[in-house]
Length: 209
Image 1 (cartoon, rainbow, N blue to C red):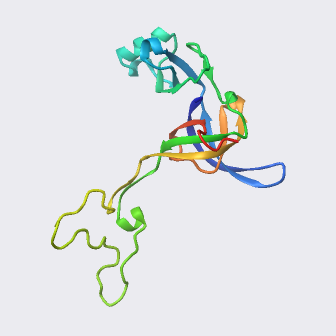
Image 2 (cartoon, helix red, strand yellow; image 1 turned 135 degrees about the vertical axis):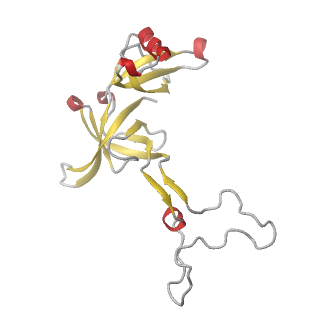
Image 3 (cartoon, rainbow, N blue to C red; image 1 turned 120 degrees about the horizontal axis):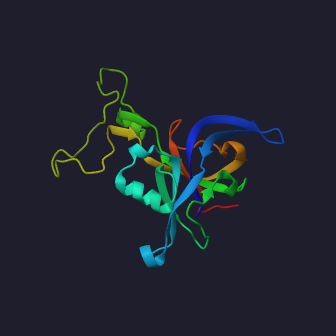
């Protein structure tokens, strides 16, 4: 499935021809450069590896430097791969926002915002305790285990802990507009991550128009 990496720039809104307001996320996507062609004979499957954003040569280790030199491309900061599904690519080929069709549905994957250590109410939506009569149980987690057997807390119990900074995918979001000269994609609604975060964009697997 054709894929492109991008950097989340923020959110804004645009107007349709009918005068409706559409909230969109602006993503600076690509251009991506093909750095490796994987085949059944050499790797056991068919895929293409692509790189995003040029990296300083002194910040790339020797094995990866040789990898990029073999492909004849400049060092890249981010590498991903995707299955070709019958499409043909060449080393050094560019993948840009122009390769994506406006109106199509996308799946966008990113790292959600980190919120640090949070309590069970904010993290899991639990109810608070009574606020009167000295209950001293306003935002506590409550009972975690049985008093007798098994006298332990089961794994996976919903409680306080680290919240956010997880890989999240939003599915079936519409590509509203493409600005080729600025490598921008305007995607309807919100996508995971903070401003400047890297997101992976591909055509939706299900629900395509």
